Image 1: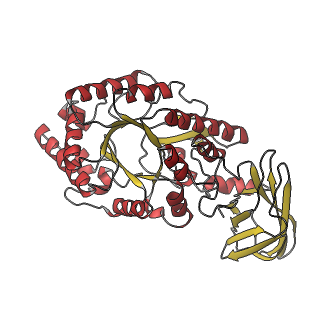
Image 2 (image 1 turned 30 degrees about the horizontal axis):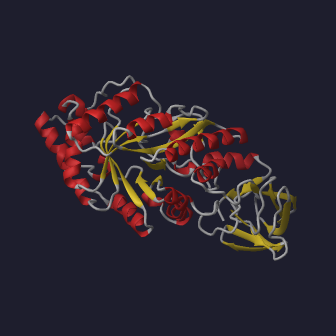
Image 3 (image 1 turned 30 degrees about the vertical axis):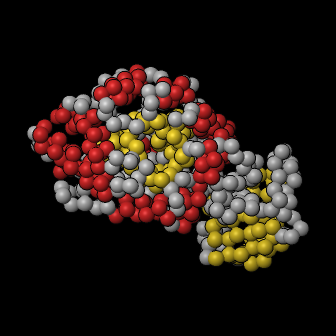
Amino acid sequence: MSPSRTALRPRLLALLAAAATTTTLLLAGTATSAHAADPPLRDLATTKGKVIGTAVTGSKLTGTYGDLAGAQFNSLTPGNAMKWESVEPSRGTYNWTEADQIVAFAQAHNQQVRGHTLVWHSQNPGWLANGTWTPAQLSAILQDHITTEVTRYKGKLAAWDVVNEPFNEDGTYRSTLWSNNLGTDYIAQSLTWARAADPAAKLYINDYNVEGVNAKSTALYNLVKSLKERGVPIDGVGLQAHLILGQYPATLQQNIQRFADLGVDVAITELDIRMQLPATDAKLTQQAADYKAVMDACVAVTRCAGVTVWGFTDSDSWIPDVFDGYGAATPYTESFTPKPAYYAIARSLGGTPSTEGCTATYSVPNQWNSGFTGQVTIACSAGRSLSSWRVSWTFGAGQQVAQAWNATCTQSGAAANCVNASYNGTVPSGGSVSFGFNGTWNGSNPLPIVTLG
């Protein structure tokens, strides 16, 4: 379901780092912007004629978060910035700041924007949700909202999730402010008003637990079929795909195809795959298989427009705040290291990630009063190799690299970066190389937080 708030979850990695004796770091290989695969996901998706998108928080679109959002994805969805309570918190008073920021970022990075969402039962401002309205008044308010927001971004957005989550699990219509006061035809009216405001934007109905063939997705199918027959503007359906580890819906591709056969596009709009914490290698491997299965189903159907992940890093995921004990649902860790799921997405889009199967492990073999020796080992599994490498991390307690060997290391503030020497850039299949450094510390010497180089 669309989250009420995206949430930072730094405590998980802090706990893991405190308990661990080694830390796995990113290997950037030869890529300077993708940091994980050659080429980045957006280039692979474009070659396939697909969208690979992510939900974003506007205030975070700087630093590594902004770099990855711009480099890896060809579409952005505002996680919260375009919802009614965000854009019109009091009646007639609008706040477009974050929404405008995301649109401007997308334009600067040659990305599409998916508008989310115009009509929903949740995240409505108090003045609307708690007001007393006649059907005529409510209809006028809804039309004004749709017209105002869609017109503001006319020509700038590729698609809109016009109506969000209209159905119950059994396929009946959800009881909401809209259906209770306007009847179920509020859906057709909303689509018609959105089309009038921007004839070029693709108009979607978006829902969750409709990924496989079931009562809820069949209700959505019948609605779309009816709207098409009536001539109501409807261009696509969004399957949110908030999935649970190991519970990939086997009928996903069949379901995508049956909607496509109605003459509409299909998009996976809010993909994440949650697991019970802690994350383990086995769980991450299963998660990668699940991500790839979803991507493969979309790639296999021509009218599947693409896939959007609901936040690309665990620090921006809604899951831990809603599902107690669950998390690690996105393709990147909280500190922006790509998981096996990232590489699975790349493979589904036709990529062969050059650093997949290679790791860098940080350890402290020796420590004294104010100094320590650090060691990093870069290793590649069978069938994987590197022709060059770079590792990077962020110190958490003011440590400083003083002298390095078998690598060239630099440090700016807390951020350290090390690249191979002229003689040890090659890491052979099944082999490894190591480098070390002396460093200084004062008070504590925790293992560094994993970051992207």
